[in-house]
Image (cartoon, rainbow, N blue to C red; front, side, top):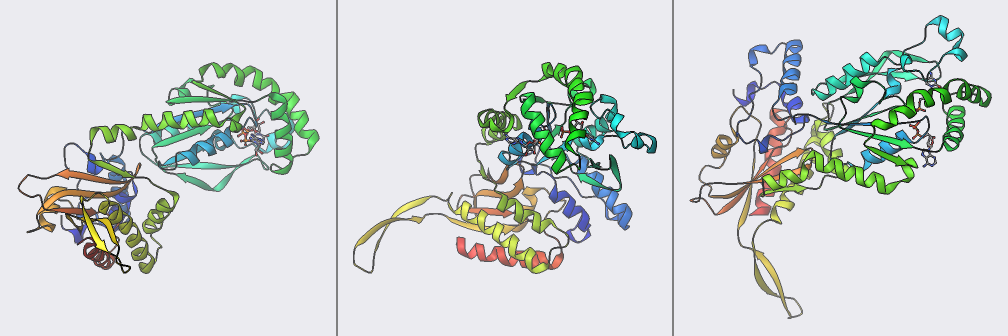
Length: 425
Ligand SMILES: Nc1ncnc2c1ncn2[C@@H]1O[C@H](COP(=O)(O)OP(=O)(O)O)[C@@H](O)[C@H]1O
Ligand SMILES: Nc1ccn([C@@H]2O[C@H](COP(=O)(O)O)[C@@H](O)[C@H]2O)c(=O)n1
């Protein structure tokens, strides 16, 4: 398929998923959907399911369950884990979102309703949600309102597939079907009196309750249900965190374990020539901007250019150097270094071609030493070196794979790569 016939939604969709394609052992790139399916509605569903079925998506996300009594600090712990996993795509799903909305009759007698009993949740729907996310599909998670005890009827939170799914809630270990979907189970263990104090403050400030109703509900439902359902499920936990969010040591250890499980380090072991540029929120922010369909052309070019420059600078740091002496304006001798090989940049637009064919097409006549492929992946920005046959050993080629939105912007991107090209020699 030629570049021109690739539907733009395919380009955007394929580009916004996790990218491991540079690492596939079979060396094939998936083909975009046929242009014969290009009526808007059809195109969307084809490209969407294509992205889901993309073999580049890691096989299974890592699912973490976080349970514990009310106000134990579950959400706080999840937020801390998410912060520390900044170089991975993480989504948080709250069991609270799956509370059943109350009927008019139940609403009238809300003080008699037990929100801490397992039956108050729609567990079928929760299982469906996690199964879909695990299989790489996005899911419309309901939005629950603790003040009205209802779900929003006309809106939901669209949660996308990610590398890490964190499921948090008082009873996420209660049902075996939910437990079976988890790779790691964490129980946040905080003293009951501390939890009650926090709950009183939170429910009066954030959930529109008065102190009497909080205390009454706690004694009538929350505490008995904690003893009957929450505490007994603690035995399923792999890790118990005493003191919740205060326990930085436990959270550091958990994050380290998740990193290992996600295989970032294995990746570098399998491909010794892979260099990962540490992702930062600034880098993710720029990738988010250039993927936004509403971004202006000017900003698209501006931010893509900044990302490309980061890769170029990083790539330059990998070039071999030799010692070089220069004379300064004050006539002293400064011993520094000089590049002894050169770097050039080639931008590759996603096409149906294999990376190797695309490379050959782009590098006609250039002698190539190493290839650096830039992709914004789950582990940050990856520079992937691949050795080419021995007869080509002069230059280093930098393949840049930004999201190229339109014919026009791709030309401008090529322009900006050319700048880097000059910069690199
Ligand atoms: N270590 C802590 N010290 C003080 N307040 C905390 C701490 N952890 C959580 N909180 C507060 O307690 C309340 C409940 O915490 P949260 O993390 O939402 O618990 P959960 O998700 O288990 O209900 C929130 O208002 C939060 O700000
Ligand atoms: N309408 C509702 C729904 C739930 N609750 C209480 O929320 C608690 C669970 O949320 P945490 O953030 O504390 O884990 C649970 O103990 C329910 O009693 C409510 O009060 N009203």
